[in-house]
Amino acid sequence: MNRSFFARNPSVLVFIAVLALFTLAVTVTSEAVGSGALSTSFIKTLGKTLCLCLVAIAMDLIWGFAGILSLGHMAFFGLGGYMIGMWLMYARTEMIVTASMANAEIPPTDQEIVDAIGTQIFGVVGSSDFPPIWAFADSLTLQLAMVVLVPGLLALVFGWLAFRSRVTGVYLSILTQAMTLALALYLFQNDSGLRGNNGLSGLQNLPGADAIPQADISLWFFWASALALALGYLLAAWITSGKFGSVIRGIRDDEARVRFLGYSVEGYKLFVFTLTAVIAAIAGALYYPQAGIINPAEIAPIASIYLAVWVAIGGRGRLYGAVIGAAFVSLLSTWFTSGQAPSIPLGFYTIDWVDWWQVLLGISFVLVTLFAPKGIGGLVDIFTGRIPPKRHGADLGPDSGSLQEQEAEQ
Image 1 (spheres, helix red, strand yellow):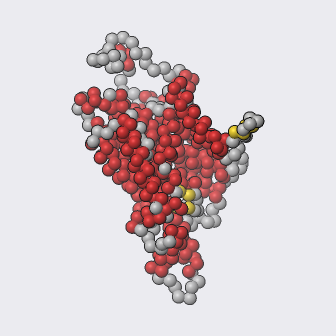
Image 2 (cartoon, helix red, strand yellow; image 1 turned 90 degrees about the horizontal axis):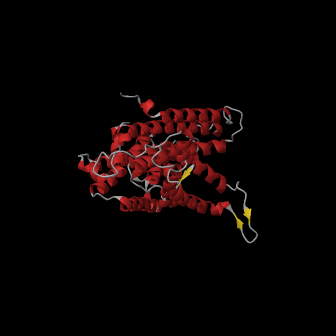
Image 3 (tube, helix red, strand yellow; image 1 turned 180 degrees about the horizontal axis):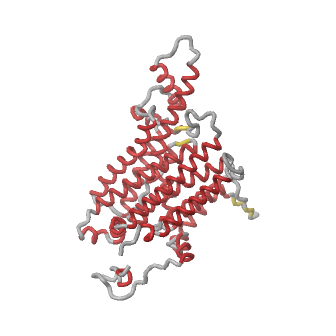
């Protein structure tokens, strides 16, 4: 008997309902349309947190379900931010330059306006010429396409080279980390075309929206982030619930056996790697206009390591676990690093959480790995009564790790 998608995945409806209620609660308590109980800055923090939850879902797909520990997905996240940031910075600067030249005795030519825009954007790195990568920066439509195409093509090429060589395990993780480091080091250079260490700034200022309060804009981005998270969760749940999901879990558990059964292991890996890179890029494109700035430090390998830690703490292999882990660690990190967490005086030393937060995060990761491998998502299983099948009865395969009777009945 074939059951519907939602019948097979009740957690999806629960997640969408909780997210909808959360979005409604934030809306009615915002400064823009509600009581004002939540400040605009906190609305931005919540919107950014939802974007981090989306990239955590991408990480859970590639790691928790496909078994590929990628330490480079925050590079795709950052590239998505750079792509949309180029349009935001160009359009905003164009408005400023056009307004300043409007009162000139001789109307400026189009080339003079472009040169002035280039000087404003690249003067900080001693240049005024637009690099080729900015060729489509004046078009929102094309830059939105670049948000998907640039990270997607990078993931496609990198994944094809890595998977066709059958690089797996820790070696693949090192390769993804090397890719991220190489990209970050390149972007740090002033001649990279993306303003080097200065990055792109002023992204929170939407072109043509000067008269609109930041409270409204922050709420718009929050809604967009919530919608993207809901769609991303639906897509990930749909992918993992069918035959495709069974195959990638099989690749995670026993790649050689799946290959022996005739499946194109490399093709499945490449598809998941590229898809999750695009999801991460979309999350980044929504995140950085709320953050207001992006620079190469955001793409450093440590960011991708943090992403893996979030998913591990939340519980990998559970989409809701990835969301819980990202939200929990992100909000807790904001509380600790913003100075709101009280320091702990020990007499001989005072623990300042701004300095010790990363140590606490590392310890939490070690403890979860050793004593609670299911992460916070495991607590959800306990509360909902979700119990994994007991592996007993006759083996249905050549070894004791094969499917068991009770699982075969499901």
